Length: 311
Image 1: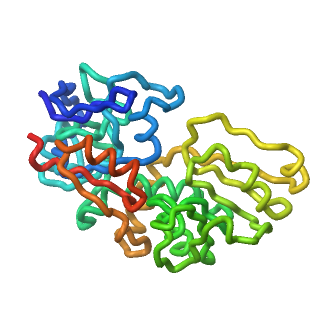
Image 2: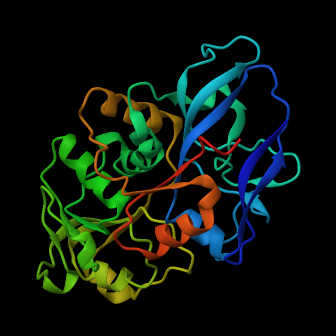
């Protein structure tokens, strides 16, 4: 089997070409992808070659972990059937290239227990992994919710929406780009215009390794800083200010299958709204243009690639 896929070389170059797929095994499904999303965090680092060492990192590779499509083949016993619309959080299913995270292709082979139903979610289903990332940062509602969120891209907005949906007070959001300070049911401000220095919880989703000292200076005594972005550069901070505040630092890792299932349920029952976050769309064959827009245009919150004509 072959499929069309996006290949990243790690130096700002990408190609759109045919790659070989591993044959499906017992319990696997083959999914024909309709749409996939471009991550402006990890995928930007993979595209530029700035991704720190990561298990499975080797170029050329197929990126992507936000794919939605239709099951076209099922092997062995499975709850899935051909025609089911599903979300696929990436796949390592190639014989001649690496898959990290492997979802940017026209067809994917993956274990049936890795996918979740996307029925009724339309195009917004590509956001499920990003929403699950926000859910994981909140530890399914058991952690202290953010009083301040740093970054008003798609992940920052999902984190703010989820915070409110779970019953916590609306957070303040910092955003340095005027294009991303549009109307929202919570305050979105330039950091320079925020005088507060008593935040009990700050969640950073911007992935900026240079701002830890600024964020620690905004914490209340005993406050917590949650690192929910992905950081290419080493992290460091001055110890005395953190010492004076008795600051706590928490790193939020990748979402779990439980986060994905819980997020899917919150979207299905209307608790979490995914609307308005997909701002740009391009055919998959125009991936080079799409990547440039996704990474360089502040008006682009989420770029979606259309695979319908990529056979």
